[in-house]
Every structure is written in structure tokens, then in C-alpha cells.
Amino acid sequence: MRFTTLDEWLDWQTALHPRQIELGLHRCREVAQRLQLLTPEFTVITVGGTNGKGSSVMLLDTLLQAGGYRTGRYMSPHLLRYNERICIHGQEVSDTDLCAAFNAIESVRGDISLTFFEFSTLAALYVFQQAQLDVAILEVGLGGRLDAVNIIDPTVALVTAIDIDHVDWLGSDRESIGFEKAGIFRANCPAVCSDPHPPARLVNYAQTLNTPLYLLGRDYFYEKDTVTTWRWKNNQQDYQLPLPALKGDFQLQNAAGVLMVLNLLQTRLPLQLLHYQQGLQTVKNPGRFQVFTNNCTRILDVAHNLQAAQALKQLLQSYPVQGKSYAVMSVLKDKDIEGIMRCMLPEITEWHIAPLIAPRATPIEELQEHLQAVGADCIQCHTSISDAYRHVLALATINDRIIVFGSFYTVADALMVEQCLQ
Image 1: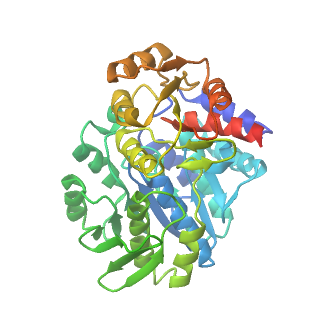
Image 2: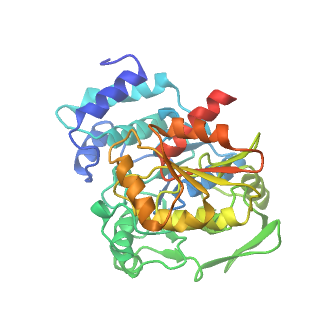
């Protein structure tokens, strides 16, 4: 074994490959072939999209567990622990299992260079192969067509809401991005799109490939029924269900796509109405409008593109505040920084910004310039997100609220402070 601890493995992987992101399947597929990982015996649901991927994965995992199925879940990035990325039946895998997976990968890799994400994807597939799963839920990392997750053929594919993000890799318009997301489709294997306005290139690609594609508003429908219930229906089923435990009406869009996927899998993985009800009421997804309420209200949300910021803004407006709203935020350099800031501007009284310790981090001077450009006038700069968060915690009173957003890194740093406070 090359290393004995998880931290050693992760530090080495970070330095191994010269580029953090390198899209393409050939290297990862070759290593997976050597490990005999390419044809899993369990059902596979692959989830792509710009926004709503993580929530959809958690909904799928929770509902399937409610039905008694043994699940594997692969997500990225993590917030606090690398182990969050790979879960068996809702439980994070151990350092020991991850080290064993990395050792197996390293034993067959030879001279093939793998990125950090490719290592984690292969580790997930290796762990899942040992775990006697009924179903694995795989979240695409970036795009779809050339993402490492796409070495595995899905039983059903799900594409969630599509918006402008990662333009350097996926293109600068929804049509180009939609085409990349559609890369997880397979001929004659069903796919679902939960975006109410799917890009034409995504729909056309499914037709060209002969992929049965199920669209929101055409093949399945949802509506909010009462303050506590919603309806989902297609041409065979009509359910009245409790609202998801995940906050925000936009989560109904995610849940509707998930129910369509599960409906398509009914012969493989039968579920009853009771399982849907249980799963919807118990699902959790840290970092998505995650609320802490002691002393003052703190809201942590990983919103990091304009569509996600708009959803966050809408949700904040449904929870009015009597006092001040403090923003603790930072955004990566390749995002629509001013678009996000302009969207959130009406909801914020004071802005507290800091540079991230991350690739593609935006320098503090640029963050300040962007805020000034959109009309923000109460701005404080800090050396780190954790310092900014602690500073605002000391300022805020019981009627105030703190909103942490802009990146997974931003939320992760705030969560670490919250852990220290518990």
C-alpha cells in the first residue's frame, strides 16, 4: 500500500495530475476496465444538470432507502469530510475502505495519470462493487458527456435544471450546456429532464440517440396543492404527497423529476405511496438553505450561479427579517460574480467578503470592485471566510440574520465554525 492514511492519499492525488479538471473518458475508463468496474450488477441512476443535482440525488437515495433498498450514493464536492462523497445506505464509507479502494486503483493504474475527481469516481465504483447494492446513484461532477461518471451506462438518466455555469468547459449558452448534459443519455435507455424549458439540443440529441425522454410539463406534471401537500401525476399515476423537507418551492421541480425516475424503475425497484411519503418528509441535504436558529438566524446555501441565487433570493423573501441581513460570501473567479451579487443586493444590509483558499479563487480586491459596481455600499473585507463568519456572529442580534452563500467552499468554512460552536 502506497499510503496508510486517507489524508496522505488525498494530498498525493492532488499533486499527481497537472490539471485539476481534465474532461475525457479514456483514462478513467481504462483503469475501470482493469478493475472490472464497467458493468455493475446493480441498477444505476446517473444525475446531471446545473442546479438541483444534489437535492435530486438525496431525494432518490432517501426514497429508495424508505423502500428497503440498499443504496450507494456518489456526490461531489464534499463540505466537511471527503467521506461524504461516497455513502452506503446513507452512511459515509470509512477511511479504511477508501484507502483500500485507492490502493486497488493504484495497483492497476500503471502510468495512467488520473485527476482527483477521477480517483474519487473510481473509488466510489470500487466500493459499490463490494457492497452488494440494489442501486447506485451517481452525480455528475461537471457537464456529463466527458465527465468521469459517464464511463458507466445508467439504467435511467436524470438531467435537472440547466443554467449558465462552467462556461470555459461547457459553453456559454444553455443550448451548448444542454448538449453536454445530454451526454449521459444512452440509446434505448429512459431519461428524464426536470427542467421546465429543456434546451432543444438536449431534446434533439435524445431523439437522434433513440432515448425515451420524459419531460416535465409533457410526460409528467406537478402542482402545489395546499400549504402542506403537492400533486404529482403522469398518464398512469396521480399522487397527493407531503411537501419535501427540503425548503423552497423549486424543490418540487426536483422531486417531480425524481418521482418520474422512480416510476420508470417500478418493475426493478417497486415503491409504494408510503415510501414516497416517508422519504419526502425525512430527506436532508446539508448546505442547501441549511438554517441554524440559536441566538440569530444563520442560513447557509451553496448557491454559486445566477439561477441558484435567484432561487435563494425567492426563498429569503418568504422568510422576512426584522433586523439586519448580513452576507458572508465569496465566489470563484469563473462564475457570474456580478450577476449573483446584483440578484442578492436587495436582501443584504451588510456585505462581509473574504478570499477563498481554493483553485480559481477571486482576489478580495476584485470581489470588492464587483460589489461596488452593482451598488453595494456597506462592505467589509476579511482575511478568511471563517474570520468573516465569526465577526458577523459577534455583531448579529436575535432579530438579525446571516446569509452565507457563493460557493461550496464558503459554506464549508462556515459549517466548520458552526461545529466548533456546538
